[in-house]
View 1 (cartoon, rainbow, N blue to C red):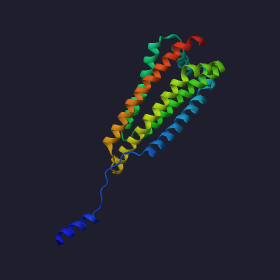
View 2 (view 1 turned 45 degrees about the vertical axis):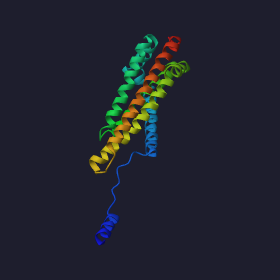
View 3 (view 1 turned 90 degrees about the vertical axis):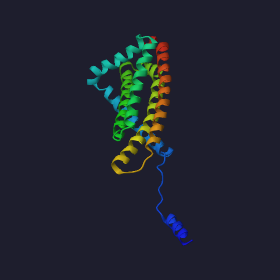
View 4 (view 1 turned 135 degrees about the vertical axis):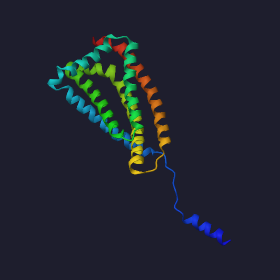
Amino acid sequence: MKGFVLARRRRAFAPRRFAPSAPKTSALSLRAVMLAVVLFSGVVLGAAAAVRPAQSSGYYAAFIRQFVAAHQSRPMWQIFCEAFISAMVLQCLALFLGLSCLGAPLLLALVLGRGFAVGSLTAYLFHEMGLWGLAMYLLLFFLPTALQCLLLLYLCAQAFDSAAALFRANFLGHAIAAPLRAQLLLRRFLRAGAGALAACCLESILSALFAPVFV
């Protein structure tokens, strides 16, 4: 009887070990807001860079003109393939960085670069063509680009959480639910890939319908 009481006391006062928990929705929402701010900063930087006189006549402007001309002249299936490959490259990079313990800063750079590209295209069309260029952007690029940016933020929020957790586990010794985070990241990657497929279909359809108007 005495041994039973002592055993109960040891179990009562023994330190409890908590299993690593899954990421909280509030934390992921906060990271998504942070990444959205980074994306918007990239849009502003890209717009400022596109309207500089040195950029308006160089390789930078030639690349944007070639991108717009491709949407005006190429068949719908080719536009879809190029857009889908571009979107999946970004998402695969986000997945790879999310599975790396040092991937969090590079995820910020990835989102910033995506915003830079969006801002550059928008500002260049408006700078060179005025309201006609703005109308072209709204009809051809706005909806697919907005959808792809939202999907990238959706994926990168989970990837950032996974990369930050791996960093804490490897360098700070914190316990994390690494398999669970990797599973959640893979699920988001598949959903974001399906969304990118729909966005690229929309982009090719809009280009086929409205691009001839701006030739």
